[in-house]
Length: 322
Figure 1 (tube, rainbow, N blue to C red):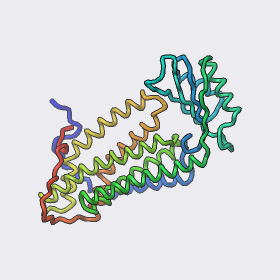
Figure 2: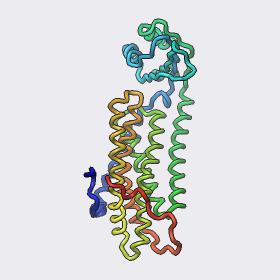
Figure 3: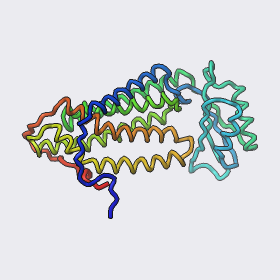
Figure 4: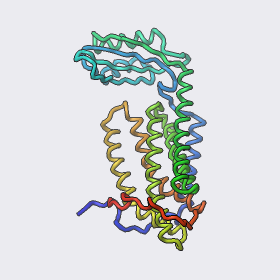
């Protein structure tokens, strides 16, 4: 007997309360934008500027001990990561310690660097510091601009791809869902003041890809059913298509969430922000693929008479049982 997350045949009317779902989405977007403009994001070292100290020791790197030694200095955002390289010798254990710029300073002062080095020597007396590098606010500002451009270009590429693959109505629906997901993800980071760094930008781009994959699966089935049921109202075709792909959607989302939750609990502080963004992105991405993208498509309508056969209709993974 196979485990099923949803029944094999479902007939849920996803558009019976579409005003409620879109109202919830609109309210969450307003809250997200309000939080972003009122209190902003808690930028990490990548965007605020700071100093990176490279350490080297014969003793194995103990990230927890390093962090405990620096906690008493109250330096704010401190990121510690071990560096792995096959060229390193057995007594060459390297770590990177990144410290955010202190309030009113463009970079970490020499006094703070000396205090950090003294604190780390209490953990590993033989520790050395081969390099100390600082990133000023100008470079950090450029990183913010570059990150924003990367996200916008990704969404723009999705718009063009869906437009060419389907129709412009499908493209606008998919992009609306992606913008919805990105805004809500940025909003929850602003609301909870979770550290926002380059890893979160990577998570945003991953969320765009994940949400797009979900949306394309639904849209592919919609296009197939539009050809198959030419006399059915568009609302009925959309409901049928979402129900037919619901098993695949739920199985993909739940199994992905199981892996992400495990990483969030066991992965440690270094990747926790990234994993949190992915968990939130999977949830809102699944929601937007069903309720936002399809509702936009219902509003805009779609051409029903295609004279040419579709060589790519259907999706071989849409009927996988969950």
